[in-house]
Image 1 (cartoon, rainbow, N blue to C red):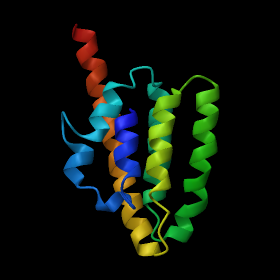
Image 2 (image 1 turned 180 degrees about the horizontal axis):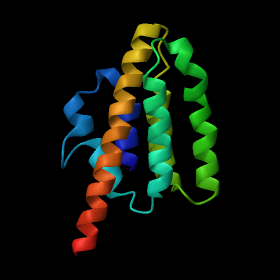
Image 3 (image 1 turned 135 degrees about the vertical axis):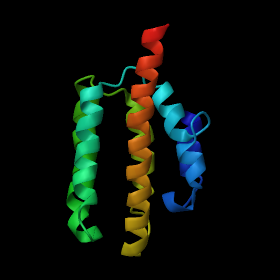
Length: 136
C-alpha cells in the first residue's frame, strides 16, 4: 500500500490525479487498496462510507469541515479496536491530507468529491474481493 500512499503524496491535491488512476478496475488505487485490505471489517468500512455520504449532502466546506476532521479520530479508534488495519488507515489519512491542503474552499470541495469517489470505489472493490475469495 506504500506505493498508493507515495502516489497520493506526490500530488498537491486529489483533484489533480486522473480519475482512472483512482477508480480503474485492476490498476486503480481503490482496487489495489481493497485487494490488500482483506482484513478490513466491512461494517466499519460501510459506517465510514455512510458518514461521507451524509457529508456529501452539504453544500460548502464550512458545513463539512468538522465532520470531515472527526473521521480521523474515529478511524484511529477503529484501528485501535482492530477493526481497521493500520496500512488501510495510512492510505486514507494520506488521501484526507490532500483534501484540505489548499486555500480555496471550492477546490477543497472538488478534492472532497474525489475522496468520496475513492472511498466508494474501495467499498465496492472490497465487496468484489470478498466474493472472489469465497469462490476460491
